[in-house]
Amino acid sequence: MAHLTFTLRSIVATLLAGASLAATAQDKVLNLYSARHYQTDEALYANFTKATGIKINRIDADDAGVITRLKAEGAASPADVILLVDAARLTKAEAEGMFQPLNSPVLLQRIPAHLRDNTSGGPQWFGFSTRARLIVYNKATVQRADVDSYQKLADPKNKGKVCTRSGSHPYNLTLVGAMLQHLGAPATEAWLKGVVDNMARAPKGGDTDQIKAAATGECQIALTNSYYLARLMRSTKPEDVETMSKIGFVFPNQDSWGTHINISGGAMAKHAKNPAEAQKFLEYLASDEAQVYFADGNNEWPAVAGIKVKNPALEAMGTFKVDALPIAQAGANQTQVQQMLDRVGFK
Image (cartoon, rainbow, N blue to C red):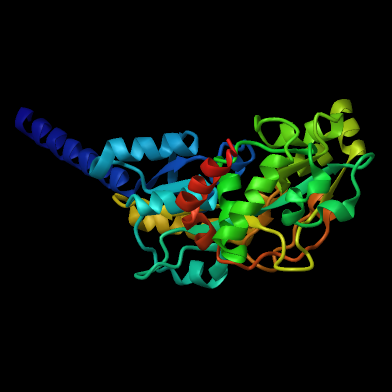
C-alpha cells in the first residue's frame, strides 16, 4: 500500500508539474520600452492585453533614457518593442542599430509611406500618431498674415518677437530638417540666422511655456506642437482659458508645401525575444481602436487615414494641408541641422 501511495503521489506530482510548464509556455509576454509617458496610453495597453492575452512588461523613460538603456544591454536586452517620440529620435536609434526590419503587410497597408522608415530591406519603424508644428501669436500685437509661414519667423518685421524652446530639441531638429529639404542648405541657414535675430529671449522651456510667453507678452510669436495647444484648448483652468483668449494660431505654409508634421512611432527591437508578440502589438497600434486612443487621449491625429475621432480641440483646429515630405528624410538631416544651429548661435 505504501508503494502504491508513493506511485500515486509521483503521478500526481508529474501531472501538476506538466500543467505548470504548459501554463508557463502559454503565458505570452511583451517587453515594451516606451518614451511615451502619457497616462491615457494605459487604457490602450490594457485593451491589447484583454484582446490578445499578451501581458505587457513596460519600462518607461525619456527617449534618451531608452536609447542609453538599450546600448548598455546590447544583445542581452529583453526589449521587444521600442516606442519613441519624434522622427529625429527614431532615425537616430535606427542608425545606431537598435531596430530590425519588419515587413508587416498590415503596417505597410495602413501606415502611409511618408510616415514610416523606408530603408532597403524593409521599414524599421512606423509612425502611429502625428502632431503639427504650429505657430502661435499674440492677437493684440501680431497680424496673422505676418506669421503664416515658417519663413516669416525670420522676417525683420518680427524682430524681438519670437520665442522657442532649444534649437537642439528633436521637435526643432526635425522641423529644420524638413526646411533643409525644401529650401536647401544656404537658404535654411540664412533663415535660422534670421530667426535668432528675431528672438525676444534666449530659448528655454517647453512648448507650453512658449504658448504662455506669447500670451503674456514675454514674446509675441512662438512655435509649438499641436497637442500642447490642444491641451490648453480643452482645459477649464482659469489661467489656461485666459491664455487661450489672448493667442491665435496658424497652420504654416498652407500656400506652399504645407504644415510640418512629426510623429510618435515604434519599432521591433534588434534583439527581440518575442518577435511574434512584438509584431502583433505594433499592428495593434495601427488598428482603428488604438488610433482613436491616440487622438482622444493625447490630442494627436491618427496616422491611419480615414479614422473618425471626436476630439473637440482637434475639431476646432480644423483641416489643413500637410507637408507630404517623408518624415524619415527630415529626421535623417539632424546632424547637418545641428551644425547649422551651432554656427548661427541657435542654442
